[in-house]
Every structure is written in C-alpha cells, then in structure tokens.
Image (cartoon, rainbow over the protein chains, first blue to last red):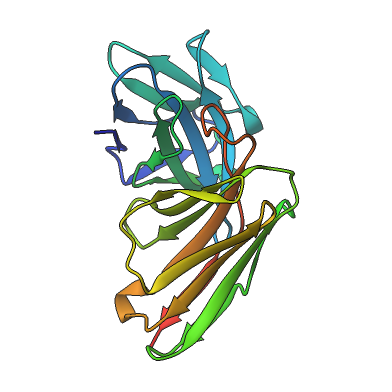
Length: 113
Length: 115
C-alpha cells in the first residue's frame, strides 16, 4: 500500500537560513511525487513534482526537491528562507496511471525574522 | 487564485439539515476531486470524477453524495451529518483523465461545522 511520511510536525528556521522539509514514501514501482503548500484559509497550492529524469527538481518561489530512490525520500529545500514561506507543507505520492494521490500529514514551517 | 472556486466558504448546519457544496473549475480540466481535511490528519480523498464519471470512491459514508453534471462543476450533497464530519472540504481538479503526472489545483475550501 502507498504511504507518505513527514516525520516533522514543525520546522523552525531563521530568515535567510536554508530550510529542509523531509518526506519519505512507500510505493511499488516508480512513483510520481509532489509538494504542495497551504497558507491560512487557503487551499493547497502546487509547488513542484518529480516524474522522471533529473533527481533535483525546481519549483515555484525558489523551492527545490531532491528525489532519492535508494532512500525513498523527496525532501523539499530552499537555500534562503523568507518569513513569507511560513505555511503548511504537504508531500504527496501517486502510483503511475492511478487517480489516487496519498498526502502526508503535513509539516508546519515557521520562519523567524 | 480563481482557477477553482468553492461555495459557500463557510457552512454551519444541524445534523438533520440537507445542504450542498459547490465547486467550479475554470481551467479546462477533465478530473475533479473532493477531499476532507481535518486537523492534524492527512488529507482524505473522498471522490474522484474523470470525464464526469466517478472513478474512485473511498468508502465514504452515504450521507455524502457527489454529483458531477459536467467537467466544470462538482457538487457534494450533505444530509444527516454527524459532528465528526466538521472539517474543511477541498475541491481540486487536474488536467487529463488518467491522473498520472498531473498536479492538482485546489479551491479555497468550505469550512463545515455540524452542530
């Protein structure tokens, strides 16, 4: 069965410092992986996805994520955090050809000025 | 963010009421989804429609009834709900009828409170 784990409920980082939000997954075959962000009172917004190819994918707002097949991880990163990056981040996985996307429980990111 | 709209944004209903949530997507997508978001729990997929046909139903109680009259509109009809159904209900859409590589675009959600 597919599953996604975000091991940290909350990540705190100072503005200007690099940030990492962790995600590991369990799925058969080669999965499609996604990151979404949710700001207060808003729906989820797509940030980036890994389908195939280069293990480092770049997305919106300066975010990037690294796919590591051997570690079954897809960590979200940003070189320099902004206060406006404070939000709830969701990792998601989908099996190829499927409709069902499995979301992690979310990680709340706090960026302090 | 006007690609996917949801109405109402907030809804308070008693357990004996009947109400409907509405979702409309303006992106030309072929698939639409209903999710339930509860505090400190992962998003729960409720229903998936592809080309107006239901393709996924995640063992959702019958007090939730979806309707997809065309590829741009999705409804969630509610009746005799329970307090534990209080949550944020999110609608989403994606391009293409086969799921696959496409990301989803979400509406702002309807905050439902069942009293």
